[in-house]
Length: 389
Length: 234
Image 1 (cartoon, rainbow over the protein chains, first blue to last red):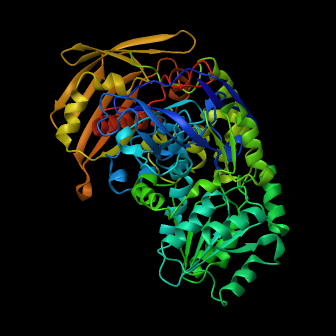
Image 2 (image 1 turned 180 degrees about the vertical axis):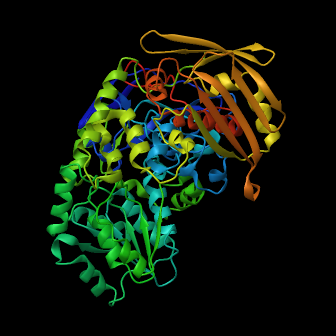
C-alpha cells in the first residue's frame, strides 16, 4: 500500500510499504478514508521530539471503514464506518476503568523507552514516535487498530466523514480541555490558539455552558473562524501591547475564570521573552517555547483553572510561583477520547458540533509532504490538511 | 516463534552507542534533566541511558539494589513491581502456563519449555555469539511465588515472580526479580551487547508490562509485522 512516512528531520516521503495484518486477536484492519495533520506532528517533523525512526508511517487522527477483524473482536463488524481516538486503550486496566484512556497500562509495546522519561509509561499512540509506542500511523491506505471493540466507534448515518474525522483527536482534545475547566454559568474561558484543537475547545466551552469565550491568535482567518464557528470574541496578540492587560480589560479587571492552552511547545509571540525562547530552543537548551502557557498562567483569575492541551517537553521559566500564589488549578492530559466519544457523536448528529470546517485543504496521499508544508507554514489559511488515501 | 522486539536492526547497535556519548559530553552543570529531551539525534539507547542517569540524581544512602534498579551497574540483580487488576491465583496460573514466559520475555531470550518445570533458554548477540542454558523451577508456592534457577551458566541465573494483594482492593502486586550472571565482565557491558541496549531494570519492566497486558487482555502489545518503510518495521 502507499503511505506517508518520516525519513528524517523535515523530510517526509510517500512510498510503498507492506499492508498491515491482524497480529493480535482483538485487532481490526481499517481502510483509511480520511486522515489529517495535527500540530503535534510538527514537533517530531521539526526534530524537537526524539525516538522517530526513518521509515515510520505517521498520522494519528483518522476515520475509515473496517475491512477485517481478529478472532476476539465481537462488537465491530466488517463494513462499519468508524472513527478511532488517537490513543490506544485496552478497556480492561484500572486507568481505562477510570476513563483515563490515554494512560492505559496495556497498549505500549515499548514501555522501557518511555518509563525513564515520564516515570511510568502511557498508552500507545498511532504514528507518533517510539517513545509513544512506535505504532504505524494513519497516513496510509490501511491501518491496524488494536482492541477494536474498545477503540472503534461507529459513525451514525448523517454524520459526514469529514465531521467524524476530527472526532478522532481535535474534538475530544478540545472537549476534554473545556471539561477540565468545570465551567459554571456566567464563566469566561480564554483559549490560546485557534488551530483545530483551540477551535474545538472554544466550541466545547460554549456547549458546556461558558457565557463568554475569548480566542487568542495572530492569524486573521483563524480569528475569523473563532468568531464565526465558535462565537468567540477574539484577540490578535500582535495588535496589543500586553495580552494580560487586554484580557483584564475585557473581563472587568477580574481575568478569565479558566484559561486553555491549545498552542504547545512551538509557541509564537512577541517581545524579549519570545526572543529568549527562540535562542534557547535553537541552542537545544530547552525544547519548548512557552510564551502562550506563561501568558495563560498570568492572565487567569485568582483561583482559576489552567487547562493545558498543548504538547510540551521541558519548559524554561515556568511560573510555578504564580500558580501557587494565585491558588490556581492545573489540569492537563493527552486526550481521553474514548471517554467523550458518545457525547461527541451525539453533538455531531444533532449538528451542535460540526468540525468539518477545519478541513481547509484536501490532498491525495501522494501530495502528503506538500500538505504538511502548507499546514506547517499556514499557507493559504491552511488550518488542517486532510488526506484521502 | 516469538520475535525479539528490538530497537532497530542488529547493525544499528554500535552506531546507537557511539551516538549516545554526544549529549552526555555536552551536558554542563545546571543542565539537569534536560538531557533526555536533547537526545533526539542520539537515538533510543541514549534516551534510555540519559533518562535513567539524569532523572535519578545520586541520593545519599541508597541501597545497592537501587543502584542496579536505576540503570547501568555491575550489581547483577534487578527488581520491578507492577499492579495487575486481577486476583493472585489468576496471575499465578497465567505465569505457570508454559507458554507465558516465552511470550513475555521474547525480546530477551528464546525459551522452550521442556517439561517438569524445565525450560531451555537461548540468547543471541548481534555479532553471532549465542548463549544457551537451562532453567528449572526450584520453588513453587501456588498463588504466591515461582522461582526458577539456572543449572549454573547462563545470562539469567534466577528469575522469581512473587504475588501479594495490592492495597485498596486494586488487584495484585506482581514483583519480578531477575538475577543476571553475565559471562565475561560488567553486566552493563554484556547487557548492552545482548539485550539491545536496554538497561537491565527495563528488561523487568518490559516483561511485567507484557505480562499485565496478557493477563488483562489476552494479548501483548506489539509493533511486529507492521508497515514501515524500512527492513525491520518494529
